[in-house]
Image (cartoon, rainbow, N blue to C red; front, side, top):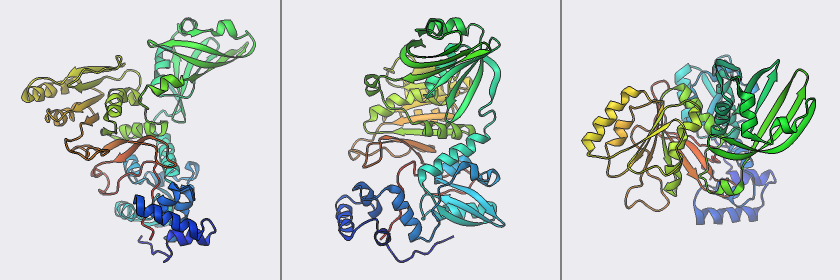
Length: 454
């Protein structure tokens, strides 16, 4: 599983391939000496090469194949050799097997520890292949989402009101949702991480649609034909603009609603995790208990996102608890009950212990320096626990607080850096549980992962 290097550094490999010049190598070395980091990162930061070219160079340096894995080509039985948390933590996935050998695609040639863990777990020889981290995580999400019960199928356990359907789509930041009508029966749907979630609609959906949408389909959609228009939508105490497209025939009709957000409104809000990160968190929740710490500079971003996170992940009907010493300034959040953390430490610990019997779906907690008992007590209140911790006095500017004891994952805010857009990055914070051997290798999120390259 250990791979020998070719003897060439990555600069020489890219030079021999005609991708950079001697002058550009010197520019990158100067940048590396001034800013620190790895040589490959310096090349990307200066715009001399793309991140994918650095990854290809690393594969060549370590005599590894460089692949672009496709979910459709992954053997699902081979992928199930690992759990979703192991795959996300390592940014690695077994994708194929031949006899007693299995191919493990990783985002760094130094992920030999992951190969050793997989070998110890399944008793197969492991061959490494290098791939882009974004593509690997996309395949992980697709493969494990396909295994979730009911993915993409009709959820017929109960009918939803149109308000509930819109709330699910809104909280999941769905790019589109719609209504299908056949023989008078309404079916609501929304897109969720590449999957379509379908629900039967309650009988009053048509009257509700006429009330919340202006102009309504009755005003703009012909009895037979097509129509498209911009409309104001009012749901859940919120107002917004949607693009509406409709198709009407004698057998039924289709409505497609695509939200259009106001740029001025977006600029005043703390950005939410992107769709891929939300889907990864949902997969982790489906796999077992989740403890997640939010960290950002400025801290306000984590504090404001914290009570909203259960709604983003759990959707309509969740029962969540938010614990804080301060009053939550945001508007009331569906499904969230906010309680103050006040009083003596001993009383707080007893009070939180009593709350265990309520069996909340999720709990979010703000940990202040003056209340050290809140975090250990809050960890047992739900299977999904989200926490923000104040930065210690005297901590270096721009640093995050360390992961708290008992935290399995962190959600860190990454500011704009070179060609990487700002956003929330999911990382493994603690050793994996007993289902797989532990590892000290953190998840790479979707950042460029480069190896020491001489």
